[in-house]
Amino acid sequence: MIAIILAGGKSSRMGWHKGGEKAVTKIDGKRLIDLLVESVSKSRVSDFIVAITDNTPETEAYCKRVRYKTVATPGAGYHEDLQYLLLCYPEFISVACDIPFLRTEHINAMLDAFSSHRTSITGAVPRKIVPKKVIPSYTFEHEGKELVSCGINVVTSSKDTIPFVFNDPLLGINVNTRDDLRIANIILQKLK
Image 1: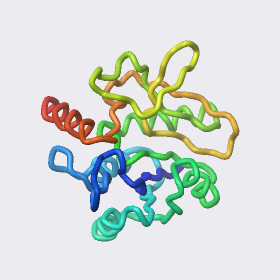
Image 2: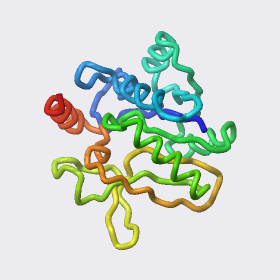
Image 3: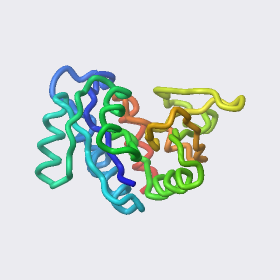
Image 4: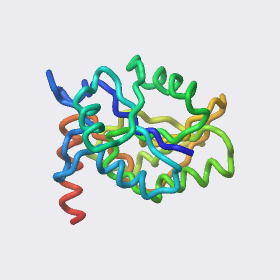
């Protein structure tokens, strides 16, 4: 199974008026895209591709410079772009470009879950363990628990989706706003 790093969004919640692209934003001295590529390339996925759009010319140029494979998507929206990618790749792991605490073991756990269930899977963490200052982008309920979608999914054409719950509070941090970026930088400094 391949991994597709989704890096084609508009970064509108970051509050940048021109030129800001999340994937090439630096966090603790490294670009977000490079942090993800490091984790993805050490995992058991067979390969990875970076999904770009017309919204992300800096990301596209950077990927070409460092020789990351890319695929262009329409940029119509998250779900629309996933549907477009499914036309080319019947199953894949999607990884949002804004999850700085994604680790190789998270990706491998999703691969193992897919081997057992053979359906679409949404990576999540319990809301109650996510740092209190973090405002999640998307939460949902499952079996009476509030879960935070953490930006890693197994995408298939299956109509069914099951959650895979990680017990890692840092995986609940997506860099969607400048405040999220500040929080992630502080945490990374503390982890050194």
